[in-house]
Length: 179
Image (cartoon, helix red, strand yellow):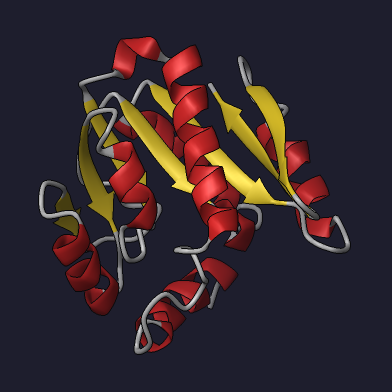
């Protein structure tokens, strides 16, 4: 079984407890704010349009994205979708997993998700994002060893038209890339 599939299969078990990744805390809130800033500054054409969020978990970043447009969330965990729907009832929630994106929009987001993808799954996920929307944005955390960052940088930053920014919060850093 591929790594991403194993992560998706674990998602339901992880969501037995609320917020298993601590995405409600100040570090994550900073990243959400930065992602929204980058979207507003660099993709104003999508404001008010349809934003697809892949892997919305419990909807913490969805709250931020709803400030920019109409959000449709792709999330395989039933528990996470239910919590996200309570948190952000204005969003639409769909049970699916990459590379399947059964909706179309103006922008597709994959925040802290592609970390779990390796070749050839990573390339398939990126291609599916391109099929779903003309604009894409992703973020990934710079881990302690840098292995994941180097792997994702080699693929994502090499894509035509990609622009990226490194954002930091204390000891934590992320790459946010958009195209």
